[in-house]
Length: 285
Image 1 (cartoon, rainbow, N blue to C red):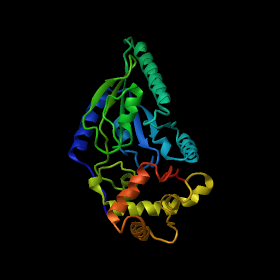
Image 2 (image 1 turned 90 degrees about the vertical axis):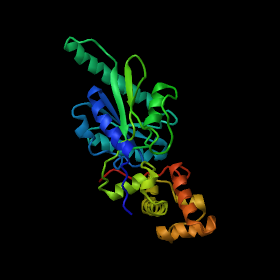
Image 3 (image 1 turned 60 degrees about the horizontal axis):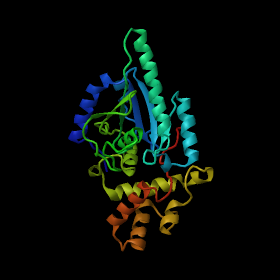
Image 4 (image 1 turned 60 degrees about the vertical axis):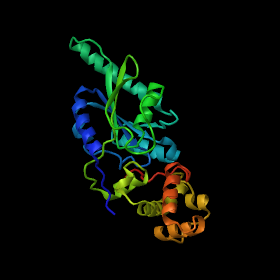
């Protein structure tokens, strides 16, 4: 299976975003905390140049506290300070707002130094589809203004919204590379539902999810992964099986042999956190 997805609305949004970036002072790059490396757009640095950037790792609720600490340390070693959020519940959003306001203070000081008047800081929220950008904006606003749902492709047009007298925010559709060269990363993006479902086969993605869980279960002893999430949820141990065999056994055990239904249910349970807080990436060693 090769995963590629670059529909027309994404291409159009990318062109519009590049045009609007010249008006922006600070960029909030939102990534999925379960896969913070795979949801990094490789061209963002090129687009932004010297503009201020805040790194937001959303879906804090979907990773264990130990994994968060590992990522915090790793990003700080790279010279970045990530802001962890759960935009659905509002956790960590206040810290993001304060960071944007601080960027505005610094921006206006530079304007005053050049004899210019103060103005609201202009920020944009960008990232892969379905990583929580619109939910973050709604939390920053304190009310539901932009449409938000846990599926890719909800936001289709760029829209400016005013958060306060100090901040104006641009809500942009998800952007994704036109070519996903790293297919292992693309597979993780599909598992996490951060790409359109027309780009992949549920069965093959569900098989890959089982394999990832089996490979990462040893991290449970370090507090970085839930213990035996598949066995706990479905009362069927994955240890004796390959990913394909486990999915078939699970279909026979729970879903009357319906492999497609089983695949969809497994992916649903992972995405909703029913299997526990499961990260699919850890900091490089």
